Length: 329
Image 1 (cartoon, rainbow, N blue to C red):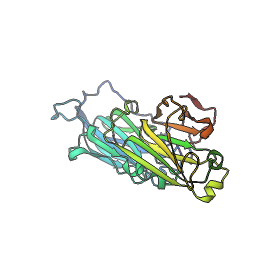
Image 2: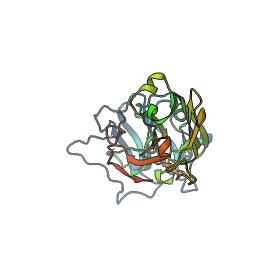
Image 3: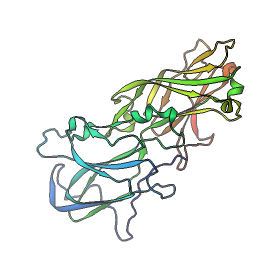
Image 4: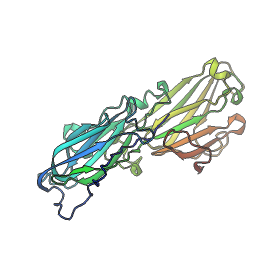
């Protein structure tokens, strides 16, 4: 089951969270006398079991340094592995920090800065290990990237305690091809999905509403799914699940290969767009959006159309009831 990941800090009954600002706080880049600390208790909101198996979580602390002339540049040389569910950071300079929380799936490495310069805005997440192997991965695994960035003051001789909820910065594309034996005239041997312009990397500091303009690197990817005899004879819908960074699907295709020649040929290709793919009308663009599941329904060769629904993720699973989508594209 997919789970909505959250960071939850349990507060003591007589303590309150440190405020984001303070009347006596120095200007950004300044410090106050004394040291500060921050404590985080990490778990999932669904069942309190913490970071999921195979996932790993990190906390990055960035600060402004007086010797940096550019106010937009932040120095980040502090990175903490917080995957074990709890972490206490002590002996920090009492000052302003930018804190970036990130939770990554198995195979995706912790972000590193370009040229090892410790510039916070240069830290990059490489999502390629997930993108290039999804057709071989278990669709029930949580392959999303979760992230939250906050600005906080750490005050001298005080401990910051705060609840921080991470949000998916990836989305999911679900291609529902229906019951295959009812959709196609002959035995299907393989279904191939080809996507172009797929974002591969993303900056740690990016805001989700800035996609896809800030994609660092794009690529074309093809996913092949072999259709066994058992799958062909099944009465279940055949679905493809792809976790992706947000982008618009342009020149995307679905290729259906038959074991034997049919009246439409052994291989049939459909443009992956909303609307009538068999008509002269140009299909509408389908979008992958942050923290949204985009479900595309193939309605068969006679109906000649893909239907598209956009829905959010619930707390426990990526499954969303039929009424919880925001309309046709």
